[in-house]
Every structure is written in structure tokens, then in C-alpha cells.
Image 1 (cartoon, rainbow, N blue to C red):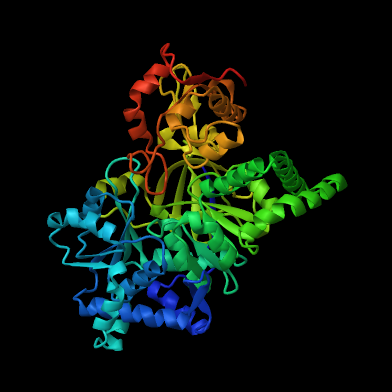
Image 2: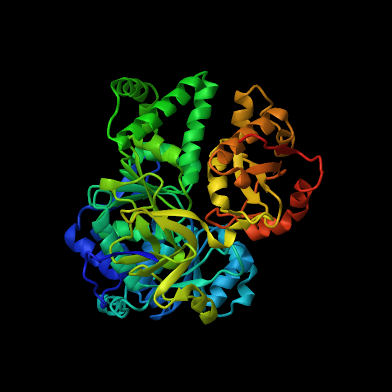
Length: 608
């Protein structure tokens, strides 16, 4: 069993809780901007550390005046915005515990989170969010308070709490110790009912303090970030708290359609994103170039950029490549850099593998994408790449204060400051995922000689063909999904003679691609999925995936589904992971058809 232990860089403080991170930040830089709020004219208005603390205390007093007691649970259903973190810290200052609910959750999911956690209040953002809660209100009689952000209820809470003394807030914020519950975050549930992850104050405090020391180039008082992925997910939630500890200026933009103009005006120094975002930026740039008759130049620029990055890794960039790169950097790459705000140096990427090609492309763009790895159960990061020695294709060494080992069957296991306290009201599930102190992640991986981790698959998702071949679907699917017209790809073949795939088309990129290829941009997904040019493009994407695996692991047939897989259809989690078991059940007939002689809209992959 291979194991790497990285000692903590900061001595643990069992008395500290998450509110101390803000108190310490205000003591260090009271007048420095900690947040920036969008203004009506497209600009940004700064909020200093001291101003944020004053607002946090004001809202927390309102919660106290409303009858919230220490230890009470409050549900929060809200898109990524300033108020999310304001409410997060106000809840802690009142001595209470936040239970995030995804803004896309259905009424039954809202009911489960509120009832299972024992929440006595909920804060929703919009009338539409409130309506979903209202549908199940009678089924959660313990929920005595329902506040709505868009009705101005946060300001009303602040106004109602003016008589609560400062000493009471100070007393309440100090009640929680490191080992106490800080938040209950429900897993997005790729299988079964979501489970509430018990994350402690120490999980946040020790992980923030050690993570900042691990990547000081990224997280410091001179840096800034624009958050756009949902704060209900542990990835963005942890980063938002880390930014307070590190003094990073944070802006918010939940609408990805407005992301590029927001980045141009906010000018962040680092980004937080999932690989799909980086794929979309690349694919959109390529299709835009194609539409302007410059597709060939863009692809040449991308190839040169990737070759340049690989040459940097090899330790020598030939003169000819240097000259080519300088030319394409001026013609093409600088424009993409400007679109990202012009100041972005780093990005932290998680939740799925980025892929070597994109890693090299963005690195030559001047954007170092630091892949990390973690789960809700590990307060987000177990490991993250170091800016000073990052390796494309790896998710870095364990963070300080974290130990990682690879079990005999290849499973990644972790212990340390990031690991949660178990599942709420579910001892059986907790026992299943622990081996002593070690949390069993369910993911498969390996270390290199420097202790850098590489994720190679998910234990439960390994497909075993009838020939006994073990196939990790992610290694096949990720490179295929990078194609602009591909929405999702799901490899199948458990107990079958060969691997096949279900494919969906990307509703956003498809019309652009169709237009650029002289086809009808108004076609439905069903019409497009039957056209020879689209089938050929999907086949090209599958050939790219097949080129990375052995013949026995390659996709031999595919079927294009008539609709994209979405969270609303029940096939994706809120963080856009595929619910593989649900998909396999819902499309069992289609899968069966690929293994019979069904002449459906399938392609047959014979190349390798």
C-alpha cells in the first residue's frame, strides 16, 4: 500500500471556529476590499472587510431577534451571490448551522434536506424558489420561519435586530469549538437519497489555514476571483471561506451567459471552474473563429500553443517553435486572454479530469490550471497542484495536514484535517466509508514518485465486459466530451462483448457548429442526430477517445439520444455529474438495441 503524508503547516487550534477566520481577516486588513458588488452601470462597488463584518453582525442579530437559537439549522436556497456568504457567516455568528439547498432542487429534495436535517427555518432567494418550498411546507411543520432575499428580508432582519446587544453575538459566535458541526451539506446523490455530510468548524478552519500556505501565489490579499459555480456545492463554498481567510477580493456572477462581460470588467487574478467551462471557452472560441473564416488559423494556434507547453515541460523550446508561438500569441491567444479579463494567472479546476490537451493549451495562454481533487466528505480538496511545480494531468500532492494512501484494489483513501465526521443520522453509511480513520473515497488512482495523485476512475463505475476486461469509463468519456457538439457521453457494456456509448448533442454549441458547416442551424437534436455529417463528427470524437485505450476497451457502437441529459430530466446531479445507474435503467432498451441488429441512429467504430 502506497501512502503519502504531508504534515500540517499551521498548528491546529481545537478552540477555533469559522467565525475566527473573519475576525482575524478584519484585524489584518480592515479597510481592504473583501467583496465587490455589481452596479447598475456594469461596474463594481467594493465592500471592505470591516464593512462585511458589520453586515454579518447585523444579520446575525436579526436571526437572534427572530428566535434562532445556537445549534438551530437554517436551510438556504440561493444562487451564487454576495448574500450567500453574508448569510453563511451571519448564521455562524448567531451560533446556528446552515443547510445549503441547491437552487435547482425539486420540492421533494427540499423536503428531504429540511426534514432530515431538522431545520427550523429556510431562506430562499426568489419567488420561484419559495413556491417550490411552499409546495411541501405542510410536510415540514418544524420550519417556523421562511425568509426571501428578493423581498428584502435580509434588510428587514437587520432592522429587527438592532436591540440585540453586541455581547450576545460575541457570546454566540464563540460557543462552537473546532469539533462542533459547522454545516450539513447533502451529497448530490448519484445513487440513492442524498446523505448529510457532517462538516466541522475544524474542517474549514484547519483546511483554510493550511491550503492558503500551500498555494500563497493564488490566495493572497492582492488576488481576486469571480465566483460563478454554485456556492451550495462544497467546492465554491470552501473557496469562498478560503478567500475570506486569505483576504481575496470576491465578485459573483451566477449567470454564465454574462460571465465574459463580467470577467472583462472585474478582471480576476484566478478562477474556480469545472472542466466543462474550460471546454466551452475553447470550443466557443474555435467556432467563433470558424464563423469568421479563421478556423484553420485558430486550430494551428492551438496546436502551436500545446506544442510550446509540452516543450516547456521537456526543458527546451526550439527557436522555430518560439517564433511561431510569439506570432500566434499575438494573433489569437492574446484575444482569449483579454476575454478572460486580462489578469487571470491561475484557475483551480475540480470535479472531473481536465485532460492534457486543455491543460497545455491554457498554460500557453498564460493561465495555469491547477487541478485538485476532493469530495463533499473531504470539505472539497484532498490534494491540489502547486503553482511552483504543477503537473498537467495530475491533481497534485496531498494538502498540508492530509494523508492519502492507495489501497490494494487501487482505491484512494484519505485522513486528516479535511475529512468529515460522518453522515447525519446514518451510522450504517458512515461505517461503510471508513476503515479506521481512513475515508474510502470510492475513486481509483495512483501516485507518481513525487507523491502527485492521478485519478484513473471510479470504483463503482468500472465496467467488466463479458471477456473479463475492466474498463474505467471516465478515461474514455472525458476526451470525447471535449468535442464542441457533444453534450454527454456514457460508456456502457457491463457483461457485454464490447463497449458502446450513449451520446447526447450539446444544445448550445450544436446550432453554431451546424451553421459553420453549411447545415440548418434550426434543426432539432433529433434531426441533427440523424444527419451523416453530425454522425461523422460524433464518430471523429469517439475515435479521439478510442485512440487512448486498448482495442478491447474502445467504443465500438454509439447511439445519439434525441434529448440532452439534464438535472431536470433526473439524469444529472446539481454539479452536472451523470447519474449512471439512472441512465442505464432509463435507456435500457436503447442499450439493448446496440447489442442486437437494430438499425437505429448508431455509428460503428472500426478505427483504432
